[in-house]
Image (cartoon, rainbow, N blue to C red; front, side):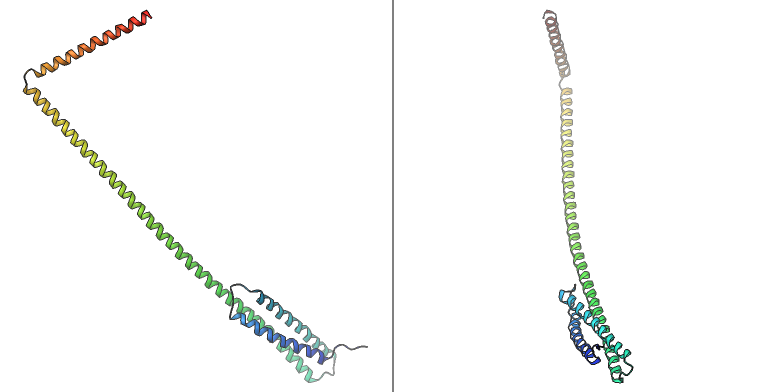
Length: 219
């Protein structure tokens, strides 16, 4: 009956995986210091590689544990080595999770700062637009006030002109009345003229009416 891989062979594989895990974790920790707002392709790839290596190491350590459990004559040295590899694997998992958490916390902080900065810039932009809007509205209100003032001034000027013309007409009427009162017989002359004008108008309207009647009956 053939035997499986020996303790020494499997242990050498564990040591190789541990060395690889140390190297990958060292590279991975650099992302905690130079975090970007989003995970880069290199960071994602390294994250997957570390998790795969640690999972393989865990499987290989489990093989060592099975060998020790199946061999009642296993030496204390090998049991100590198995315990040490299990501790190293546990430390690697812990470091991996801590580094991943640190990267995520730094990324959250960076995104929060970026978001706050954008909010501040947007608020400044809104404040600037609001100030411009207020200034434009103030200018429009001033223009409206100026227009109303001009219209009021024109209305007052027109009213003054009407009052002046009314005064002139009233004054002319008074002078005419005074003149009529001063000249004897002028009122009678004007009355006769008005009477004659009414008679002429009556005669003219009568002639026109008769002409229309003649035309209507003889057509």
